[in-house]
Figure (cartoon, protein in one colour):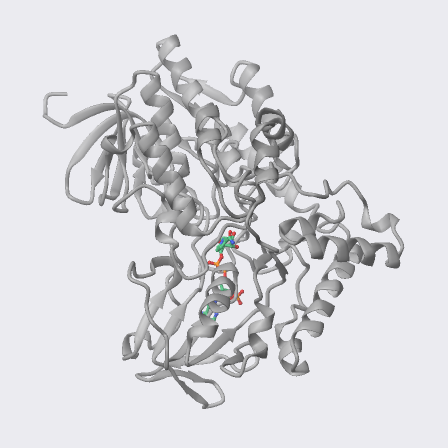
Length: 535
Ligand code: NAP
């Protein structure tokens, strides 16, 4: 190259959990790395998702890096389920501890990535116009990092305050004496409404599809519990890597609901409900496979809603009825259903009476009713798994763009690479267990595979690696076939791309379990990188 564009061995896009671990690994290997992050600091999804009540639904001791014994011993988690500020502090702590921050370019986006076939290099164009070249690109862009465009007409006419859970103001807004409306009842909406309800003049929750939510039973961790992890980390982390979704639950989900009587099922569900958390869905190992078992679990939650919510009509509206439990990610809450017993909280069923338009003063429903709002909060979800990649203008071999290649749904080999896009690696991409698993160990698994593979390419003196198209097609057929064995396809969920208008509807994550996936990945890697081609 004769121009003065800086050249690196690797470009990492994103400085969340995935990006900072990739940066650490590649620097240790002695590579020249450029890391670019849109936010003003590290954290990725946990940097932006600072809405009230934002909290992880995976236990803190498990939703954390395992690669450094020093880090896992030094860091002190306080609660069973960490809140966003604590997770963000943890990521900052890791970045500082590993002296990574000075190697990251903040407040900068990667707008375009173009592959140069002759030079076997990627050229990246940044939002500030700068360009860099790199042999490898690591897309650590997150699975739930690009908010879905709000599809509510008339929003531009609304004169009140408009807030989004995906881009919450750094300074905490005050809702006292305000009429607040919140649209969306996924995890973000449930956490936000539960947290702000006591401090609002009035809160109206606009619900289109009710969600199944289980109590978190969150609490400070006892010193004894923390110690039990800290003195057994290697064993616990190894056990976690042998568990279906890289998560250890109180109940390992070994029992088939089908083999139990109704009475036994109820007793086990009650026990799991009292323990709380996502483990509830794994009370039985066939909840998302067997329709009868699924109905029993869903009925149990519906009964809990009726027992909690005083007004029977409100309880009815809050009860999901038309899709299997687990087909959308269940929510984990701290008193969500209880807020509907407050005098200052209303529920509006916008499935029955849809929002027609936003107006200058609030929202107008199809029936003609207008609800005036001082603040409107959108918790309307994400362009999941593909959104962050598709919004970068990525062109690979022969100028073919990733968004064209993925027009009918994402195509990857093992969720890690894409045919026609050499040396571009995805962390927890579509076609891997990803969002169906505990993200941090899945991120570690992918980052370790990617960085080992890059090391191997260097050792072999090979300049390119990409998947064979036929192997990619076979893998996507496998991802599809596995999803068809489950009831998880039976909801208009973001797993299916169904929440975004015009998005191809395919089940995006690999639903065969993290352990099976890891075995396939290991076997294909050790068997001469089966399904990949070097150039
Ligand atoms: P989500 O689950 O996709 O929920 C979006 C909500 O907005 C749904 O209730 C949806 O209704 C509603 N909605 C969207 N567009 C609408 C419109 N035009 N009019 C009315 N309602 C509309 O999004 P999310 O709550 O941000 O959660 C996404 C994922 O992020 C979660 O499933 C979870 O994996 C992750 N997350 C995790 C945590 C945690 O760890 N605790 C917290 C937050 C998020 P419909 O269902 O009818 O489309």
